[in-house]
Image 1 (cartoon, rainbow, N blue to C red):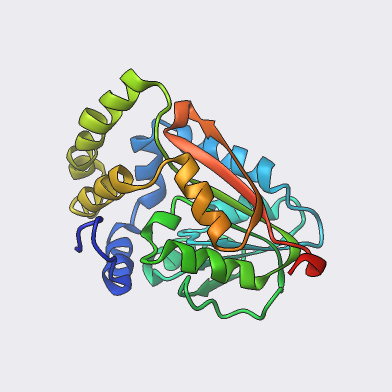
Image 2 (cartoon, rainbow, N blue to C red; image 1 turned 45 degrees about the vertical axis):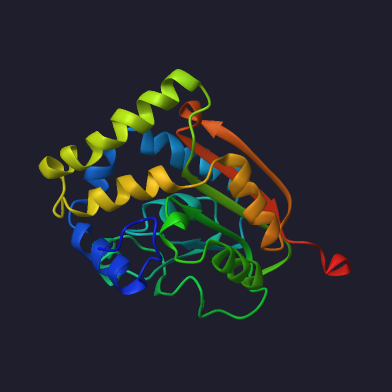
Length: 233
């Protein structure tokens, strides 16, 4: 697996997620001490999907989040480039599409909103992926990103970066079907930009009204933005 600080090979990343697909949801809950459910709930609230809307859930994995968004009455599609992850969610009754985040197989402006939960850092070109999401979202549509971030309390940030992330691969040996993948995931978390820097990348990709707030002390952050209206484009 390529190091997280280098360019990410899409095939290698897809293969890695194919390898962790078995038991992925259970592993997430164990490794986050159940906080993954709370983060999904906040993502759902901020997304605020409505009946009749079309929502793209990108890097959706096994479609756990897609199902929750669809409970609003919106039409939600789970898109991911790991076939193993999509197969792992085959029992979930939402549409699923194998898709490259940099070349989405959708028309311009077809979605009312796009969202990514804990997948943006795995794309090998963050800004290009954000631009591609903007392409398939209508003017005035919404973007919601839920991703790991930088703890705001300095003492905890030190412990998180120095110790907790180093424990991730160790824990992965006991709960994951592919423990080596968690070495990559830990490094990708360590190398990921902080809240403000990600907000700047979202703006660079053409989104406006970018805002964010922290969850769990900044270990995770929710970013939201809007695609400029047709008159502003």
